[in-house]
Length: 349
Image 1 (cartoon, helix red, strand yellow):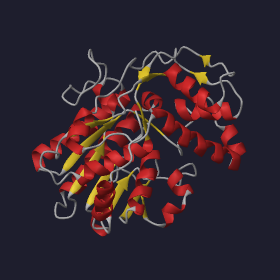
Image 2 (cartoon, rainbow, N blue to C red):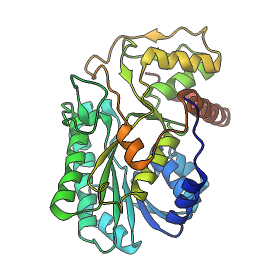
Image 3 (cartoon, one colour):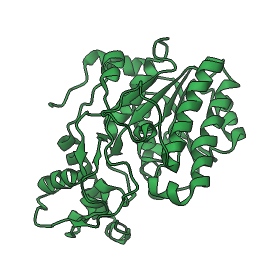
């Protein structure tokens, strides 16, 4: 698949749409939130972002973007903070990305995960419900994990949400809450379901792609905690940002409101294939992976069909896997050259 350049009319439409528009992003300090805020700011939006902690690893807080926007310090579980932000900053568009995003952490801390991902979501939706004259469009980030284990793949949006483990269930609940608020209160909301998101700025070394890149840069053997045969989608963060923005832009269309959309390059990879592609790009084929053979509790194969997003939203990924990885590798190389001790200190998987 060749990289698709954005059409001139798409670029013009985005700039005209976002210029001067008031936007609130929960989870602004996370990987997708950081890149989303950057794009919104570049398009001329007035951006406020919910930030729980002064996280020194956040790409947003490391960058000058944090000086170009308003940071709202608070927690998703605090309805008053969310409602105050909506009113004080006259929020017209809201992206709800805030969540506890790590599957392993959810297994260890289910209560905290449910508080963040479930209570946090209904707080966001309730704050929007109370101020319908302000908030006109809401995008809720769900996940492919909400589908759970299915007999048929790829996942399509008409499948049941069948997650079972804590993280999966938390995303099922967030997804259903968004649908409930749409049906019950006509909230202008749409749902985004993505596969595994990667890109520069993710310093969670428990994830496959950043840890593999770091290992090769440090001339260490990559560690694979599973048997390497698990199958996943991998979607570049810039394509995800474009998807979320396009979804928000289309929310004035009644056929989009209340709908869920899958976003994926539609080319799944095994873990071993991902590591091999990174090794090829980084000339690290002499570093044989260490296969630990764990992670048996995870769903073996998960990948998405994005034909609905292509047809209804006109979205398709601009980056091939190799192109996205090349930009990601360049980001980590620059980061590790600037912060060698910090990069080397993170624990491997």
